[in-house]
Image (cartoon, rainbow, N blue to C red; front, side, top):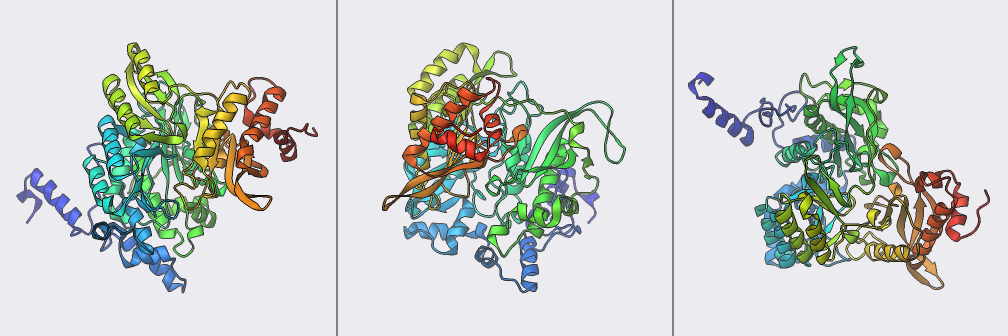
Length: 606
């Protein structure tokens, strides 16, 4: 029967039915909305795979054909798609038991992490694109945390929330409750695209170049509805930075999209004119735990091209990521093997016709405005006249259920009901009338939270630590609070924030390599005892100040970390060239031996 036999409405319905049921073998994915970009089909040759998991299976088959052994996790995905373990989760709940073996890995695909031996419980990681949720959702998360978890949630360094202390019998009800709130944690863990981050002040920042909220949500929903984009070789991080005063460390992600402005008279590598306006640069390969920042690819993208390019990069990663060695399965190692140009060529094979990105040298684009390191704390004017946003200080990211409800009430009563999480483990509530600032200050303080912060607390970040993560050597959150108390009482006065990042293991969830001060957890021998301690790093940075922190002192007992940081901060205040010299700049003009002397309180050999 020809298409003319159907109405337009009937044709749209049938196309959707055929695509969703897998009966269509050659249709392209329909555009997302009227202005949505076209995305290439699931296979580069235009023929959709017979089943969503076939792209992964074909990649696995290539390794097997070469006589190589798949990793245990790849075999787990091969034996049973982890997206199909809902009945297993329910069965474990009925029997009040946690998963064992490879089921621990499979359950992570639904956001459930069995975190024994640190806690004999699940942790549930959510998915909040651009870190944004409503007051209604925040209240719902508080209720679920109280009913099925430990009564609190942690803000993460991916502008996300985690609920802890979940018993197996409560796991399905928790997940069902999240789904009913419109929060779907599918793919929040294991070999998936993790929570997509963007500027926490997107849409309200007077200095931003582009509001990235639609881009974050578009990629989030696209991945959620394409099963072939789950089960990547390893986890994958994507961030959109639209410019402005508050960043999102996009260059620490596997893919970072960074907004830039181009002026009149620009031509691309093919000699074609580029219209003035705002575009995105694509960066690849950020993984600071492995000492790499994302590097610019030379590609200049229109905003509508970001989605198909991101999806094409994911498909290229599926094709070329290592399926045998988990330590070498991240995108960084694909880039090391193929080179950035080689990977971009493979990525381009997965792009729809006519989506070829332009190539323009980075130096031809206008440099971004500097970020405000206090911009995510306190009250700041929005681009909307008469409105301000409030950055709320959350010490080491932990919120009680009562605090979450209180913040939701503030957001609903004085703002637009919008709560924005940040990669700095605090949050922002926006759209507050200037006349309500004093009342909001009082209500934030009544919750035991802050709307202002010292230079130490404004940039204090700590991973989960050994109270909730089996990899961590130290109780990072407790030690971070102790260091903040110590420095606030004894440290020198500072004009700008000093970011202190505490991470409990080399996985570097708190990204110690990009902190002004980074602390990496370890065990330290003191007499005949092994106690918790840290290796101390200084001089890290990101964005326009990309630097990896250098290790200065090893094996500092945890109680001595605060005094060691105090000594080097005091030396900075006393010896800097002028007040414009930042702490990282100060450390970078000293050798490691000189910095070690400063940490010890000795006069360095200059």
